[in-house]
Amino acid sequence: MLINRKLKINYYFYFFLFTVISILIFSGCSTTAGTQKDPIYILNEDGNPEVYISSTDGESEKRLTNSDGNEYSPKWSPDGKSIAFISDRNEKLQLWVMDPKGENEQLLVDLIGEDEQSLVDLQNPEKSIIKKPPDFFWAPDSERISYVSFFNNQIDLRVIDLSTKTVLPVTKSPATEELGNWSPDGEWIVFTVKSGSNKLGIFKKNPLGVDEIELSNDIGSQPRWCPKGIKIAFISKRDGHEEIYTMDKNGENEENISTNDSVDNDFSWSPDGKRLTFISERDDNPEVYITTVDGLEKVRLTSNSASESNPVWSGDRILFLSDSDGDNDLYSMKPDGTDQLRITTTEGEESEPNW
Image (cartoon, rainbow, N blue to C red; front, side):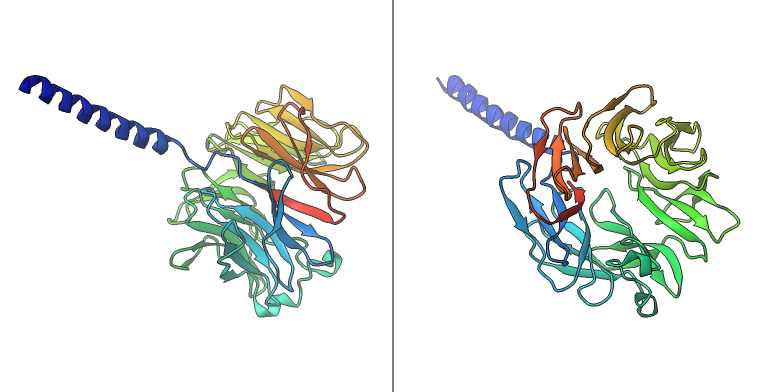
């Protein structure tokens, strides 16, 4: 009788232990990095661009910022706990961060110096020395952000640690650089040196170390690591117009994967790194396309007389903008172009979608 009782106690103990371990294992395998977040974007209804968030079905929408200034470039952190954005609410371009409810706003760093601010007017790009908001990218650990700074009439790349507010220089030279994103392991930042140096092209730099490696001598733009870290895609004009190229992470095997005489740009990697969505004007107006990473299979996903832009891949859907009713609104669809869903129905202009 005593033996049976001990066996029964041992059974419940091991069953409980197995259950706890299983929960920990499966919860540990689940991460927010690859999941689809709610769309965030800029909405300009009254000349004052603000950050908004919408449900994926478009049923609910919320304004996240409410300032007298202009907001730009909202981007989710990889862990889904924060949103970074640019604002000129203090009469200078600054990098801010907030939580997904629009609360706990926190100023991180100035992006432009006092002397340079008079040269910048993003609401009137034709009068501005900088035509668009400075780029920034979250590190994969959600603890650092790389960004473009403009001080002392010089453009440089820097990294800020969100917990300590420590700023580290990535580049410091008279050259003009364009920032790309982080490698998935957080070890490298890819960027382009566009002018002002005897070495132009695409490079990668270890932001915490000293290594800087040339990947390509082509002055490409928008260099982006694929989610698996194997390839880097970028835009090149070496054929006289914008085309999408890829290369290995070490700079080898550069390949044109869009291969068309029209403009191809505005691309986004699929989460598995096997495909890219992009905008092409090969059919006379900007439409959303998809291609395999080798460029052999291309499919047109949208078909209309409107202009599409800003395709962003997340999870199993693609977010994009379309002016099919006269102003830019937000839509999503499956990667085969089906199940197209309108998310916003405002009379204002949506821009810079992210999820």
